[in-house]
Image (cartoon, rainbow, N blue to C red; front, side):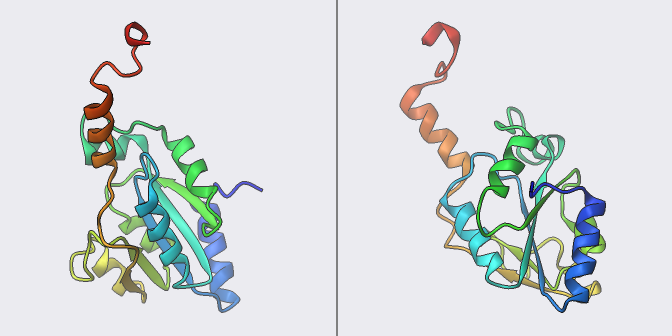
Length: 167
């Protein structure tokens, strides 16, 4: 069974989880070049509840958030890779720049963000509280980023890496 679900399917899963007394955790991000920081964030998020739904930003949202040239990996592939992690129960792609709409629809018990945030800087904080949930910060200290991976690749292999003329 694919872990990829539509927003409506995610809503039904969230309602069923609540009806069974389970704690739904929502995490979200771009996940463009999955790295150990992402894995630790999502594993920590799963530990906060019974069911982990991960919102993956759409290609259009990543381009608006991260700028030209991003994403590197398309949304369907990013969602599939995130869904391949054992700690992830379901993945939904969303177009907005924040996860506020996901929070309103799914009403998670916990909305987890990575350690590049504090409880006070989580953009969806007010929406989470209005929906009756709490925010949490999880994962290892921010020492990993896709931006840093891109810089390392460019430094080691140059701008022409992967182009037909350089292979």
